[in-house]
Amino acid sequence: MKPGLMGATLMAWSLCAWGQVEIEQERTRIDDVRRHQSALFAEQERACQSKFAVTGCQSEVDARRRAVMNGLKRQEAALNDKQRAHRGVEQMRRSDEKARENAARNPAEAASSSPESSVRAEREKEHLEKVKNHPAPGPVAPTRVPGATATTVINETQRSKGRDAYQAKLKEAEKKRAERDKRLQERGSAPLALPLPP
Image 1: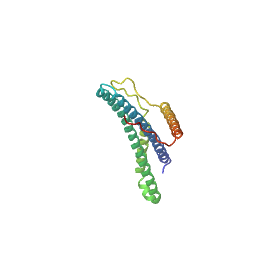
Image 2 (image 1 turned 120 degrees about the horizontal axis):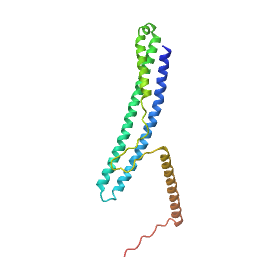
Image 3 (image 1 turned 30 degrees about the horizontal axis):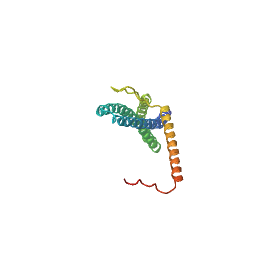
Image 4 (image 1 turned 180 degrees about the vertical axis):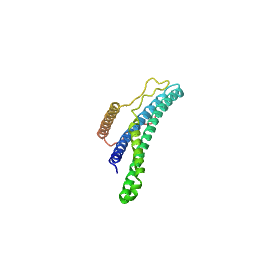
């Protein structure tokens, strides 16, 4: 095997492994954003129930939900494209390894197939360039929705603030639960009497 082809194969394999990690991190981020946005929209729908014009309010929430979810679907589609490209590189690497194993077993056959391996190396190199130059999906772009007053963008600091607030609420609930249990124990185990009928 030529040294350049071996380097390209190793580079393809390392890009593929690194790319898979990035893709999985991006999928996790998209799932987090989807869960957060779904919770926000569910809360907005509950708020609509208290308004006089429930249908109009819910229609606006549905329009905003569709816009945000469509943006997330577009990002997932870009990730799927990138993952397919990585699988193509991986398949080319496996084919190359198989060709090298066959060449090692049968050197006479390897001499006749060398033009094919150079074509394969060129294809692999071109594919690597495409994968390398392919734009990675970025963070969630703010989506403007007709009738919406503001856009919602979640970043890591907002996420950590939300986690901290959630942990504080959990601690407060545990504290209240302990206080209630203490009060119940102090009262004793005698059941409370029901009021007498009039």
